[in-house]
Length: 240
Image 1 (cartoon, rainbow, N blue to C red):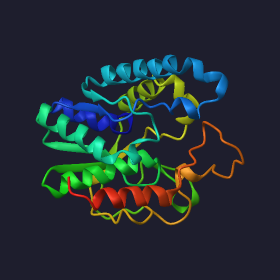
Image 2: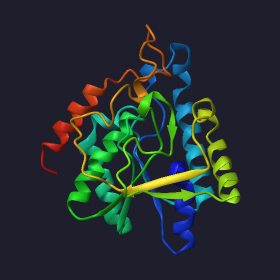
Image 3: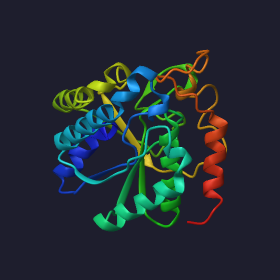
């Protein structure tokens, strides 16, 4: 949502109605948390919900729905998430879907991209927004790993940059994980046709960058890229 902050603001200024669908509540499941934090699980989830509500309010967005799904689960539950997306599209009369890019930043984002590709194949207009990736072995913010010439780059005005910083600051629970998100530009393009059985780019993916840690750590996503590719391939191999 915050990745396309300026794009949302500009679309609304032109008279568009924009709604957001939360496909996860943004927190890992209780079993992934440190044992001493688990008794606070519902409190942690409630805090994240409040943060997202404030961010949506800052953007003037309608909320098309909220899944009770934990983070790092979406890529495992693609068919269910597809039903949620289709329900929101129908209920809100959506004529264009905005999705996170297939860029290896987050396995849930890559799964959401695969769902969006199915709807794009049925004729729905779909735009993807780059957020963060590790293409070339370096942190990239708002840059696609593989540009194809169809990109639109939005250069944010000083006022938009300041507003985006305020929106990012609303996610206080994620403050230590958002320092890599730039505010100078946003980039989008029509969703390309991807081979989801392959990684989004060569080399290590963003979410796999700390998987060398030798013990389970809540802050490290130990999802294997090949497992994500297999889940997406299985999903796309079945009819809607």
